[in-house]
Length: 296
Ligand SMILES: [Zn+2]
Image (cartoon, rainbow, N blue to C red; front, side, top):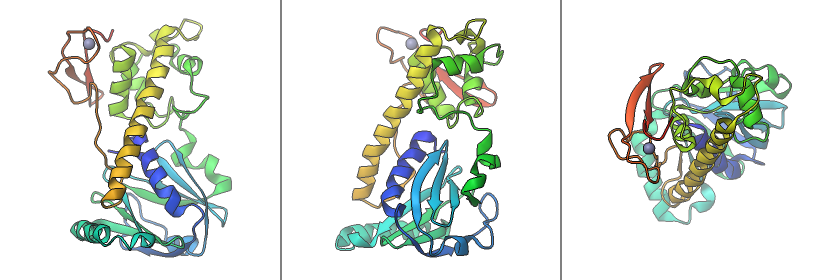
């Protein structure tokens, strides 16, 4: 399942193709994604220009000249593929792209033909992805977005805010960080990675990163620094894989990661000087990977 860094990488990949460009033609090949696309989906996009291309948590937000916003979510298996007619001269690229595309064409559900010359295809084998168009004025009240907490890479997300949110919370730190109302866009993988970098146990009670009055202690500071670092590093990785993909077939949404603790059960801890072994436990039905020796 794509997490925030993947979605940000997709945003960066789509932005040059879509921002400032007009939807010339929109093909809906399958409208039954996670929920059905509205009947007037293509009509509300065609002829409109994308005036901005942003992200909120794991949602991509394309601002339209009509005053609407196109909200897109990758779900479990969604990805975008960008084919730029401007690159047609690279015959090799086009060939690779076509072969690649032919294999998955049955899952190409939505195709945007942009005035930039870019053809943007949304491919989603499991169809948990979604698209929705809402007026910009109603975005704040949009049910998908309104209960989301702060962006973890934004300035408003800091130790003081996280400590306030965790004050008195008797859930584990792992569960608290997965709560999208507390901080938006963090998923299972990056929560494990952030707790590892902060050397905090995923089983630790959330309130222990705050004083009784809700002020941040050192743990809160380390945790916020770790969350920001782990996401920034992953976005950087995504950026390099994006360039690699550009050289091949323009696929956006899947890339290889280098995790320090996630999915490393039984392997040696990567913290300098630690001789611990990574353990896997299940918390709230999700796998947690951590080092019992240095994460306390
Ligand atoms: Zn360790």
